[in-house]
Image 1: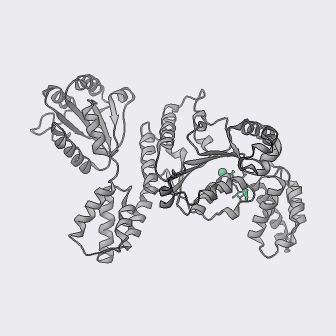
Image 2: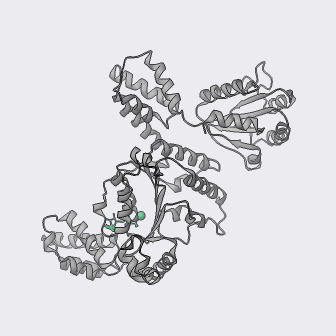
Image 3: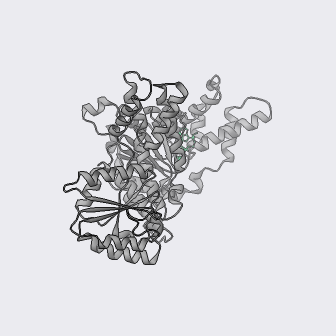
Length: 510
Ligand SMILES: Nc1ncnc2c1ncn2[C@@H]1O[C@H](COP(=O)(O)OP(=O)(O)O)[C@@H](O)[C@H]1O
Ligand SMILES: [Mg+2]
C-alpha cells in the first residue's frame, strides 16, 4: 500500500501516535499535508519543532509543553500534529510518561500525533503506543510527475523505451537523490538522454553500498563451474525464464527462494552465485552480522530499508549466506539482544512469505540445528535442498571442472576415474585444495603436476567428513526425514536418504 493510503487508514482508525522514520522530511510533510487536506472530513495540520514550537510559538523549546498543547486541543476537531525530530526527547522520563497518558487520550479523540525523524529509535516502554509507518521511496507515478516537471526545464532526448527504463532505474531512490542524479546527467551531457539511466543506476549502487548491509556481489561463476548436483541444476534451469513478462502472462508466480543445506565446501555458496548468472540478474549479498549489529531499533530499520532496496533492484537474487550463523541461538536460551534478532528474522520471514516482487532468495546453511525452526516452515522457500558429499561420479565431474580451469589442454592426461575413486569423503572444496597442493609441489620442482601428485596431496588432507562424521550423519538423518530434497540424484539413490526414500521417492522419477 502506498504511504498516503496507509496513513489515512491509520488516522481514521484512531492510531494515537505514528512514527515516520525518513530522511525526506519535506516530502513526508507534503504527503501528510495532502492526506490531512483530502481526508473526509479534512483535518487541521499543526507542525511543531523545537526551535519554533507550533505556529504562534506554543511549546517552543519545551517538548512537554508541546504535548500539553496537543492534549488541550479540542477532541472533536479532526487534527494532525506533526512533531519534527521528536525522537530526541523520548528518552526523557517526563516526556515518556506524558506521552503515554496522551496516547490514551488520543485514542478517544480525533487527534493524531505524527513523529517525523531521520532514524527509528523507540524506547522499549513506548513501543506499544507507537506505530511505525515507513515513507517508501517515490512510486513510479511520482517519479513520472517529477520527470514531467524536468521536461519543461531542460532539453530531453530520451529514446522510446528510455523514459520507462529511466523511471524503473529511479525506483528505490529517494526524491532528493533522484533530483541530484538527474541534475548530474543534465550537467554532464547538456541534456537528458538515455545516458542518464546509467548514472541513476550508479547512484543506486552507491546507495546500496551506503547501507553497509547489502552488497553488489560480482558473479563470475556459472552452472558449468559446478560438478554434480544435477537435481538442483535442473530445478534452476527450469526457472531461468521465470522472471520474464511471458512467465507472468502465463500465470506463473515469481519463484521465492531456495535454502541450500549441507556441510562446508559442498558448493552451496557457489550454487547460489551461479543462480544469478544463469538467470542474468544482479546478485545482492546481505550481511546478516552487520544487520544485527548496532543499536536496538536500528537493526529493524535497516532490515526494512534492505527489503525496500532489494525490491527496487528486482529482478535480482538476494544471497543470504550462512543463515545458521546469522541467526544462531534464536529460540534457545540465548539472551543478549535476541529480541532484536527475533524481530529482524520475523520481518524477513514475513516478507518472504508475502512478497510478490521478483526478489529471489538464495540462502545457505551449514547445519540445521542452530537454525530457528520457523525458517524451515512451509511457505518460506520454494524448496529446501540438501547437498550431500559428492558421489564418485560427482567427484569425477568436480575434478574435471577444476582441472579444466587450470589445464584445459592437458585434461586428457589425468586419470579422472582413479581420482574420483581415491577421493571418497572429499568435498568439492577439498578436491580443489588437493589440486592446488599438487600444483605447488610440482611447480616447486619445475615440472607439470600429475594424477599421482594429486593423489599424494589427498593423502595429506584430512577431509571434514573424517573429523565431523557425526555432524554429517545428523544432517543426513535430518535430510532423510523428508523435510528437504536431495540436490543430486546419486545422493538420493544411495546412503541414508536412498534407504529411506528408495528410488521411487526420487523427485522427477529419475
Ligand atoms: N560441486 C562443486 N563443483 C565444483 N566446485 C566445487 C563444488 N563444491 C565446492 N567446490 C569448490 O569449493 C569452493 C568452495 O565452495 P562453496 O560453494 O563456498 O562451499 P559452501 O558454501 O558449501 O561451504 C568453490 O568455490 C569451488 O571451487
Ligand atoms: Mg559457503
